[in-house]
Image (cartoon, rainbow, N blue to C red; front, side):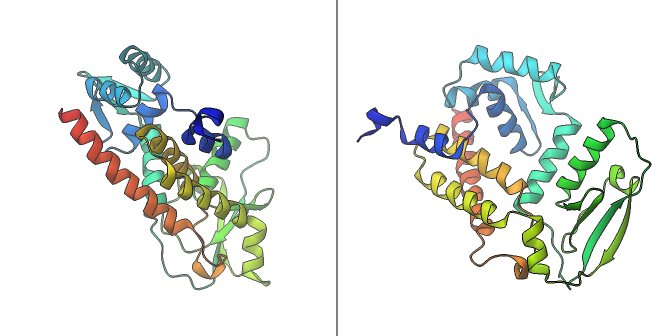
Length: 257
């Protein structure tokens, strides 16, 4: 059976991995998130869209909508990420090159101690901050993880939580297995690495790589002693770095043309 019977290999991979479709917004956002500093002129973003088959008018409409939504700031013909998305860029950069420290068996524990009846927006912001810090919820109001990451804690968690350091009485490997779906994460990471290797066109590789970067944001970044054998996190980071170098070269050549 050939591709004409079942769709392109890229389409099949997207279906199997439930990848998000490539849109003008996703192209603009991914390009700026991967660019340092995250600012590019409109003409450059239009050309990037053309590289992936997106018409100029579609890209410009997406840019206008992203400015209206507070995703981008526009000035002097250029578009830049707003502070909320700058924070996301920082998290993405950290997910690719995490700052770790030697692990001696201790865990950081956060217990929510703010008064009950907090507004829904505050509760949501707290959960999002905990996830960004890569903590997992043991039970409602109690979050923890191995103390092997070096990163600041935002005010939303320091103001609403009491932070402790402790060592579990039981098997830390078993505890990690309760807190995170490690086999599930590893399985998707391997699938994404394989799909990235198979993707032949820039559009297909861009789509898979964007999914790989989102998946890296969900990597719990546990110490090696708590991970299953052959953990694929490092390989997925290498695969994404290879794609990013390739895309940077391609965009540099394309935008200079």
